[in-house]
Image 1 (spheres, one colour):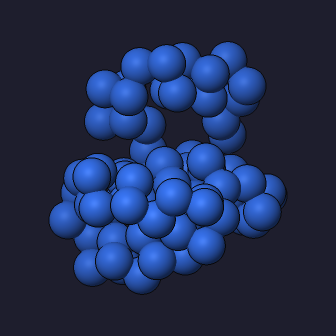
Image 2 (cartoon, rainbow, N blue to C red):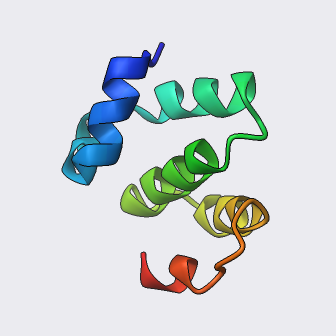
Length: 74
């Protein structure tokens, strides 16, 4: 399970996303479904691993942000 320290480091060092498991991010999204940053990180992880649900998760994450253009830049 992802703790606050790991999450903080992940935000500060996005390269750590490679070391973070999909399951950890899914658990975070499950626990806090309204947490937009977690939704975004899960979308990034799915895209990074070429998961077939990446597009759907990116659309879902976009709901939580008022700058949808950010999602075209990831």
